[in-house]
Image (cartoon, rainbow, N blue to C red):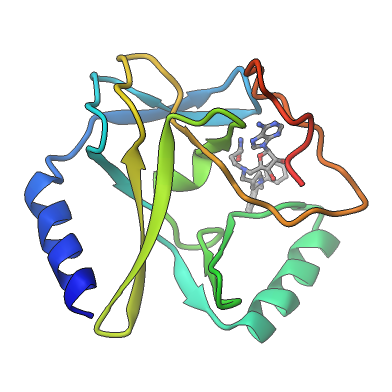
Length: 157
Ligand SMILES: Nc1ncnc2c1ncn2[C@@H]1O[C@H](CN(CC[C@H](N)C(=O)O)CC2CN(CCC(c3ccccc3)c3ccccc3)C2)[C@@H](O)[C@H]1O
């Protein structure tokens, strides 16, 4: 808990709002682009959405599938909980996956409240698309990856 509170404080201190914009992506449909340079380890954005229990996320995922929404704006946490940005979410939901991402995600819980923070792995130039590794579990049905990086694994899952 202490670690989370310190990290939250540090993040809030350093979290000078980064200017980001969602726009057409070379990777997939819409993506999030940095409008200003971002230094390595800088806080970029929080993945904001509704924290839902595993059971509820399974029901919603089935529902979204039926509605043809496909892979929705669901961010899975290690304990099975999911942050669903479909109905109420921030622009972080537009961040695409890359096999050589320029950002990484960190989940911290502060007073039981889980927050997903996204930080820069390296210097990011203005105009670059923000990406992180989705770390999707391996599946039979592959989603081909279009990140275009040299060491692309070929699929998201
Ligand atoms: N490296 C990659 N290579 C290949 N594909 C990649 C890569 N990275 C991400 N993706 C694709 O992006 C997905 C993740 N995505 C990240 C952002 C996405 N680019 C986007 O443009 O939204 C968020 C999901 C995309 N979905 C859209 C729902 C939307 C909708 C549904 C139908 C038609 C249009 C739009 C919707 C609409 C209303 C209500 C609810 C949902 C959510 C991955 O599951 C994968 O399919």
